[in-house]
Amino acid sequence: MSMYTIGMITGILAAALIMALFAKRINKIRRGPCKYDERQELVRGRGFKYGFFTLMAYNLVLGTAYMDAAPEWCDMLMQNIIGVVLAVSVFGVYCIWNDAYMSINESPSFVYFFFWGIGGLNLFSGVMNLVHGSIVEDGRLTFRGSNLMLGAIFVLFGIVFWMRNHSRNHDEELQ
Image 1 (cartoon, rainbow, N blue to C red):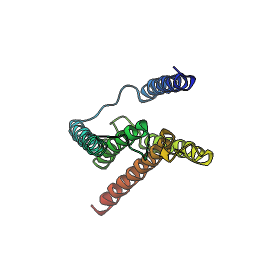
Image 2 (image 1 turned 90 degrees about the horizontal axis):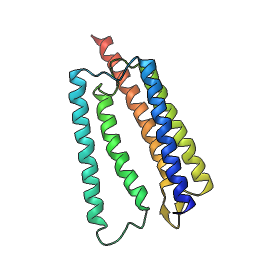
Image 3 (image 1 turned 180 degrees about the vertical axis):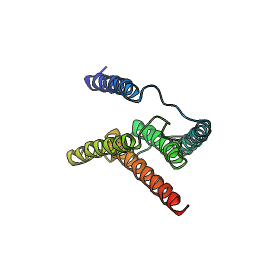
Image 4 (image 1 turned 45 degrees about the horizontal axis):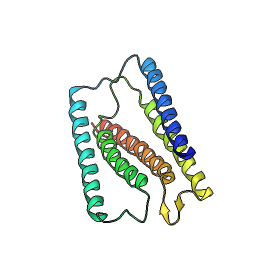
C-alpha cells in the first residue's frame, strides 16, 4: 500500500471522526436528535426515492456508455462522486423545497450557516486545487474537483433554502 493510499484512508477516517464529534455537539445544542413530523417523514422518503432513482439512472447510463473501457474524461473515483452528488442534490433540493429538510427542533439560522459555511470552505479548497493545477491531470478530471462540486451544491442548497423561505414569507404576507 502506497503512502498516498494510507494518507487518503487516514484523511477519510479523520473526517468521519470530526463529523461524528460535530454531530454529537449539534445534538447537545439541539437537545436531542432531529424530530420530523409525519408529513416531513413522507416527503423525506419520497426525496430518498428520487435521489436513489437518480443514482440508479446515472449508474445505468455510465455503465452502458463505458461498458468496454473506463471513461477518459475523469478517474473512477470522480465518476462515482458525481453520481453521489447528483443523488444528494435531488434529495436535498426536493426536501428543502417541500419543507422537510429542517427538523422541528432546528433553527433556520444554523442551517443557513451550515450551507454557506460548508459551501464556502469547499469552494475555497476547490479554487486552491484549481490554482495548483491538481484538478485535471493528464487530461482527466480527478477527485480533487469534487470540492468545487460539493461547494456548488451546498451553495445551491443555501439558495434554494433562501428562495423557499422568501416565497413562504411572501405567501404569508398575501394572506
